[in-house]
Image (tube, rainbow over all chains, first blue to last red; front, side):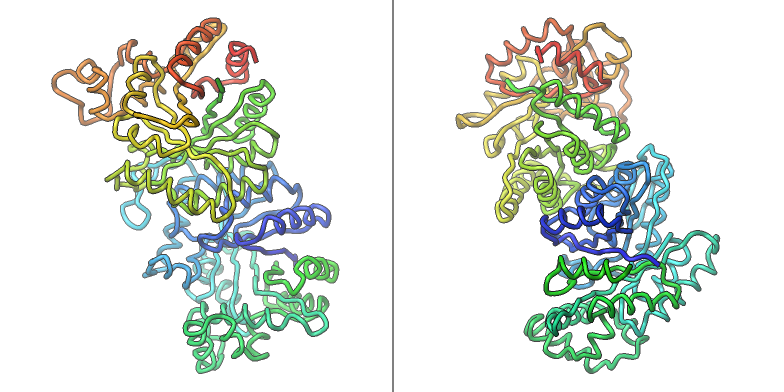
Length: 322
Length: 293
């Protein structure tokens, strides 16, 4: 099982530079970069910076949405990123995107399953060098990138249908959601994998939950805030399957909409923090993360919000992992 | 006069980087990458070149019809933070045929949209404390009339006659405003017919992508399409050499100085030598030799 570090495109450049150096020094397994829509960094440019400033560490986008930019831009950018080094350290993660972020952009999601299936198919055809025409969804008219590439695609998924689809057609999956759901989620992925044309292919299951290092009892407030945000963005179906009391969830959601994150976080109890995040001291965090191995998880991601002091939190967890 | 080289991003990134490194070593002032659907994603190519160079200015051409304002600004945010303030943005409408192939069909109010993009990008970049110039890539009269709202202008043609016409269309401009040209180029020591063919094709694409109105103003429309007008399909036999010359720079390296002097007198302060000048390391060296670099 591997430990990776995650960050988002909203990270300061100070954090980016520090992480790139740390990755080099510690031979970190992988850095995952999640796209916060319309935030500071450009997801592809930031990924290129990590690839160029490290030499061993793998770098993955986890995830970007095909709904917020032209699909050919994703195809071209991923092609460029895989070309940046001969080790082909890059992985493209695709997902629908945060429900709140998409709705802010006026995007209404009708059939997420079809969107991701379609995006995966079009990207693979473009990279295979095909002249692609597509009349619905992602409209293309004889587009060709004259390439011959194989770029691994992971799906960022939470709902059961997307998890199963990931098992069927993707090269890996990045799962997030309540801990009480993870076992079910990995089983759904495995079901999809069994159904697929090539069930014995290399397939990587990654779990990325918010992680917070607590030191001297400090850090709980950050955990509460991040959990309240995640609760507001978790699909209903996932919450149902986790068996979490719906009334409590609704209270947090309503509070976020009415009063904002800080106020809503006051309603987040310790059992909710436990279910939606990984928290504790470095040793406890690593034990918690390693416990996912029994579900068939291959890789876990530490971050964000990391803890009160993000630098020492990351260093402590990497040390404890050894 | 400042000299730049446009790097075609169809070849593999390591090859493009090699050319960028050579351009810096030879003392060119800038390299340019245009983000188009047929090319590699511009910011990644820029990032790769910037990681191997230290001072050369890197220009990025973007079409706001393909990317949102925030996507453009965020690319500059990442690049400037990682490699310093040596990036410049050129906004262009983009090749309509290529954009239609990737599902971009709305081309109404091109001029207004480009202008809005400039204003929004500038606003967003200022909010993030970013400092980079925004230039306009233009050709026709409508676009030329908004040029003075930008930091500088890149004309998509190169003959002194059309440059003079363009300057009259731009109207009055501030002192700091820079006028440059961006044209298919082939400056050579030993002439190679195959490379000239690439220049011809490149210039032909620019000419066929020009608006009817622009071609009529220049008096080329009838010569190109006859009285029957532009054909529906893009098939076209041969474009007369006199028209090709107006849109491309092709000459033995010893003659370049004379041409540079001519356009310098017209107020041009920046020349970007476009494809196929970047065809090989040798063609880049031929260019540098002609500029005494």
